[in-house]
Length: 74
Picture (spheres, one colour):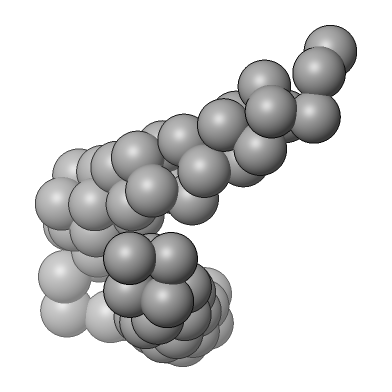
């Protein structure tokens, strides 16, 4: 695999695949998990919500870094 191809694959992941993955989790997976216990009555529900919030925070941070890198490349 050439270096150019590797760089293109990394760019594709960070510019296309990763944001699409984040969006899919936030629009489909997390709401489905929350819907299993919307009133947070089950013992593990608060833990799950805490994890979801942490993952969303990681998404925001990585998306912010990605936008910074992308603008630096321009």
